[in-house]
Image (cartoon, rainbow, N blue to C red; front, side, top):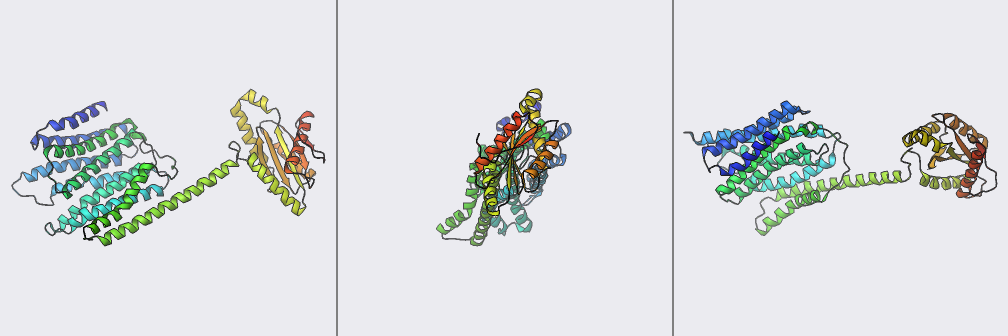
Length: 476
């Protein structure tokens, strides 16, 4: 790889020393393009990327585009005037379908799940730029009576190819997948081609005659794009380029927000510009573009609101869920118990609260380690839940202590449930439990405190047993 990078660096920097308009300049450009294509082929053979067809398409596009320089030179120096369009245009245009097809395969492989948010963002940016391309490039080219049907098709194909490439580039940058060095090199290569084409479009619109230095600098941008594709292919991280990752939360960073804002304002800006010139020639196209951008913005807002609702629900769930066991936590218990007491107050049904504590849990942790202790807690809660009735409510109170709510149950039924739980405790461990029946008047704190006192009585009596609290309110 170092050899390829060294040759590429020399090729780019030494290009400025090549005489302008010389045959050597032509050979230099074509050679750099074909060398980059050869780098891609070498990367396919030695790095063996997951989807080699993508890189074969990249190599085809780069080689074809570079060949256009040679074809144009040959046609220009032949006895017959090539005219427009020519076979050189076919070679130049071969870049767009080949690169776009390769990017489609790459994006599909890198994206584990359908990512609608990045698709909407890419469509928004492309729609805004497409409106610019229509007003300044596509419509004038399509209406030029001097170039004929094929001339119209080819003239339109260049900006359309750039729009497709822009859409694929944005989609690639916003999609999931490994963001390694090879990924960044591919993105940089795409940006080079888009920047070069954009610069030429501006120069043509301004009817500005680029000087030798500017012309050579723009040509060098394409050479850098060729070589960046080659560098991406020979880099060792090309093997992980197609690795999919979990979808990221839908979010808009400041650079993306700025780009979406600019794209959304292109339509109104064009309308204002034409109105100031007292010549509104593209009202229908601008109106349709604004409608499309407005609907895309609404779609993106809807996605963000949906994601916000999901994240809010997730935060709410995490706030009342124990991370280790997945049970309701103490906060959830402090909400559920008073609510159940009020329901029992209205119905008059009995209610039992039990406090459960694993016996000798500290000794277990010291003997087998904290990971084993965590595993015991998870396996114990899973086993206990299988023994509960559908109306029962088990929560983690803290550490190795749990609380159990048994509505519409008396002491006998509660003991039966707890005995099943005690027998199901895994890894040869036991627990002690205290149970208390609500007396119809006490608060949730008093009820829990009585059950907790009964638990301590069970501990003091030798553990691995269930003790029922007295009917008198008690406190810790």
